[in-house]
Length: 504
Image (cartoon, rainbow, N blue to C red; front, side, top):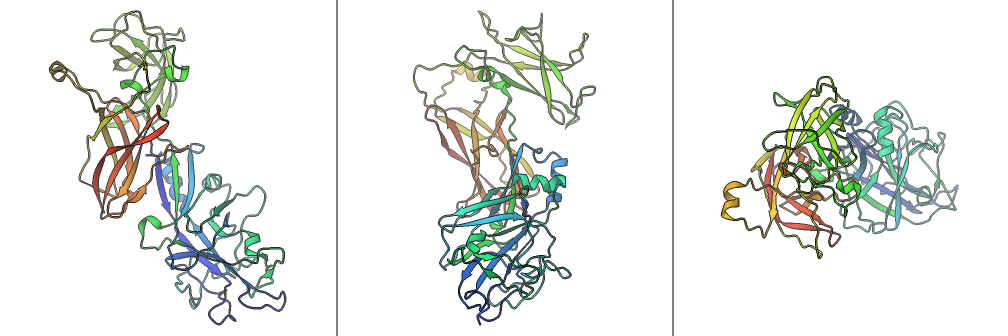
C-alpha cells in the first residue's frame, strides 16, 4: 500500500496577543474548535514600560493518534521501524491578508499533556478555556507561559523555511514518531512556532503568570503576521493536519520478467527475484516447519514438469536460500546463465533443503535473454486497468491491476490463437490520484526516496493497493500513471487515465 494518513486527534492555538483594545491580552483564550491554526509574532503594537516595546505571539499545538499507528503496525498495515518515514503535513489557508515571508517555523515535541478546548473566537479572544497561553488544562499551568517543550540536545526539533509564505508544511519527523511508538517519549504532540530569534523574546518563567514576555533586544524586530494552517475541524477533507506514513511496499516478482545472466549487466541487474505465496483456503499462511525461517529454491528443466537434475546457478550452487517477507510470502533471488541452446521453460521448486526435501510449491518460468539495443530506445505503450470498478467504499482497501503492451505490437493470427499475450512488466512505475472536480492531487506522485506510490509487479503484471480512506467520499477520482524512461532519464506520464467514484 505504501501510504497511510493519520488525522490529528486534537489541535489548538494559544496566544498572548492583544485584543482590539490593545490593552488586554488574550492569554486565557482557547481556539480548540476553530477551523484554522495560527502562528505569528507581532512587534511593537503597544508599549511595555519594562522594555519599551511589547511582543505578541501565537503558537499552534497538534497531537496525533499514535495508538492507531501502533495497532496498524502490529497488523502489518504499515512498514516496520526503519522501513517507514513519517511526515508531518499541515496545509496553508489562503487569505486576502499579507503573508509573512522568509521565516522559519520550528516544530518541537510538547513535554506535557494539554486539553484541546472548545473555543472558536480568533479575533477578540472572548472564548476562554483550556488549554491557553497560561494553562495546559483545567488543573495545570504550563511551567513556562506559551507551552512546555522538550529542549534537551537528544530531543527532536525540526525547522521548515517558508520563503514565499503560502507554502504547506511538510517535515520528516520519523525519529520523533518512532520514539512515541516505542514509548521512549510520551506522545503529547508538537508545538509549531516561529524560531526564538523571530519571536524575539526571552522565554518567560513560571512567575510571569500574566502571560507577559520579556523582549529580546538582540532578536528580530520584524512582524510575522499571520501564517495560517487548516485545523482538524476544517471542512476541507484533504487540508486537515496529518501524519503521513510512507514506505516502500513494492513486490518485485520477476517470474514474468526473468532474464538469463548477461555480460552487459551488473550482478544486481542479473539477479531475478522470485516470490512464493502460500495461500491456504484463500488466506496467506506461514509454512509449517518454516514459519518465518529460511526456505530453499532449485531450478529444473522439463517439457511439461520438472525432470532430471537440478540446474546449476551462476554461483555454482544447486540451491539458493530464500527468506521470509510477511505472513505466507517468501522470496529468493537467483541468477542463471543460458546454455548454448537456451531453455525455453524453467521450473522453480521451493523446498526445505533437507536430504529428503519436503516440497512446497512448483512454479513455471519462461526466461528470456537480456535485451540489447543499437540505439536509444523509445517506448510507446498501451495500458488498461483489468479490474477497475465504477465505485468503491471508503472502508475498502482495493487492488488495481494493469495490463501493458507495446503500442506497436502486431501479433499474427497464429499468435492470437495460441498465446496468452503476457503483459509487459514496467519495473519503475508510479501512480497519482486526482480528484476530478477540481484537479486536486489527493495522492501525488511519490517518486522520491520513499517509493510509496511505486507499483508492484508479478506474473499478472503491475498493480498497487490503495486504502480508500485516503479519499473523500462523494467525488470522482482518476488514476494517472508514469513510467520511468531510462533512455532520457525522466518520468513519462501515460495518456491513459482510469476513473472511479468513492462512496461512504
